[in-house]
Length: 254
Image (cartoon, rainbow, N blue to C red; front, side, top):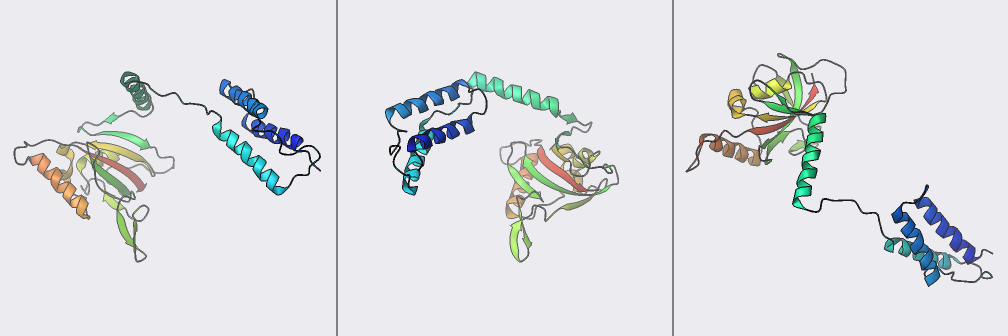
């Protein structure tokens, strides 16, 4: 024989105790207050007196009341910017902090890059003449996806099915042979296995220096590269524009 009053106290105590292992915060104190008031108001009153045994149905109903009470108690709120100016300042602070941890590197040929993920593996670094295996993803300066290899954004045939190319496709590059644009070769120097960089590639050291290699193989990629070519030379009433491309590159092996 177990008294429901005792069960109610134990259950409520466990429910509160699991949430607050240490001194309660103001929000937690409010929850405790509401829980106590809910008991006074009858939400948590025992279903039976001390002389009645507890059935499985009784336990289910009592547990349902506890769960229902937890849903109506207030949750801690997270501070957010409340106007355009505060949001702008918050964004600038985050950008500044990120740049301190991961600055933009500027090369003499006009290429800029940032390290997205450093190499944590021992071994050689990329240098002129290195034979490396890499994956890449190319987008416009405005962030529009163009095409990629090995990043999981394209499909390849594997096992008789079309599957994501993540981990299934890559490109072999001999640095200095212009298998990729000259600016990408510059950005590859010093990279280690597993390192990933984001490269801002000016057109002067871009696709034209590698005879437009690497080429896209999908219809979308072909369309994107043709549009990029027209942007560089101008079309219709649009004058030529020296548009950059943005490359995410990762070295898989050296």
